[in-house]
Length: 206
Ligand SMILES: C[S@@+](CC[C@H](N)C(=O)[O-])C[C@H]1O[C@@H](n2cnc3c(N)ncnc32)[C@H](O)[C@@H]1O
Image (cartoon, rainbow, N blue to C red; front, side, top):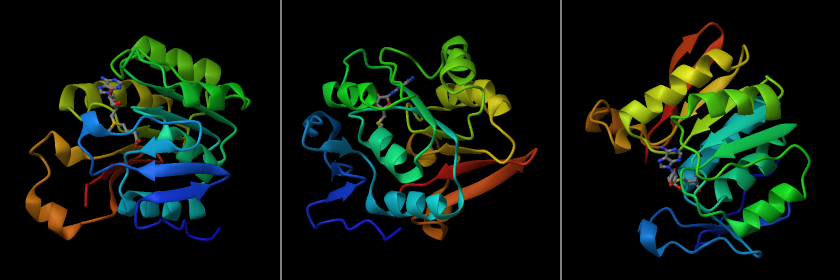
């Protein structure tokens, strides 16, 4: 697949859908997704890292934690083309263009008003909607230690062998990652650990 072409204004298209990058815009000022374009909160280095991942990894099912305006959901769906995909978001406010998207695609699900800490719900999603074969989890939700750990403890054991559990922006709310490490790994996903033939990656902001 050709690399995604991103305009100077942060617009790009993938799989027939349009996206606007709003990573640098303060959260309260970000544009809502519309029927014309989804808002995505990932900077270009993150998008490139996902492109690299998609060149040699084909997950059958994806679970995303932290939807915001749905741009990342549609981006991951178009990039990886999984059989099944689901996502949870703590905000109770549904994103209408995303609901339309999901309703038009088979085996696509979203859950608003759902916390990443809700282990029972996460388990139901994996066993039901994702047919018990999740092999990519993207945690871009709360970024706080307790929430991140709670989801990880529920979901990592459910990940398929060879699966990837990816935690974005890990340094955002924790002091565990030092500036020194951020300088060493300025843009890439940093794969730290591999257990039982599954990988867990922490992605650092550029
Ligand atoms: C960084 S934004 C997600 C951006 C989106 N993945 C993208 O790339 O466009 C983080 C989202 O996580 C949601 N969130 C925060 N805490 C959460 C929690 N405990 N459970 C689920 N979602 C949460 C926020 O409401 C927000 O929409």
